[in-house]
Image (spheres, one colour):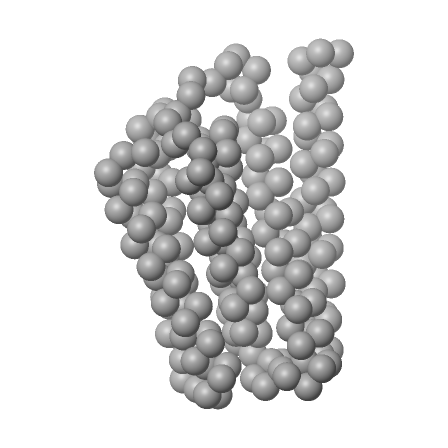
Length: 202
């Protein structure tokens, strides 16, 4: 991992942590004005995170798709992209960041436990089918994590501790949407992997 990549990721992680703290403040003290700030901080963090991905892409000469570190790098980004898209659709779901932001940070931290150096691609890995397979996998992961966050919010709200959460019906609706998106993405993941394996091995 280059110095520029490390600095961008550190700044992104700091932004994510700040968004998480503001989400707690917004929930505990019912500070509704914090919601736009949380979204903009997430946007800034995602921009820095995307910058790190681009820096790595340029330095290694191919999309960062391989190895645990690169998988975690992209997976964490996708989790927060889906989170942000959901928050822009329904600002009342702001507390979901309390679950999805730590999940993304844990995914990223897990990747750092493994070597961060790039490996040359084999011939079989140089295919758009591999890219599609990986993208579908990250989208499925992100959708399932956000659906899990909706489920947590729904359960907490049902137990009477859900101050600041949206009505259960809204959480249920978005949980269903995220699960549906995850199921479709996982279908693409399995289908593309199976088809490309057929091309390679018969």
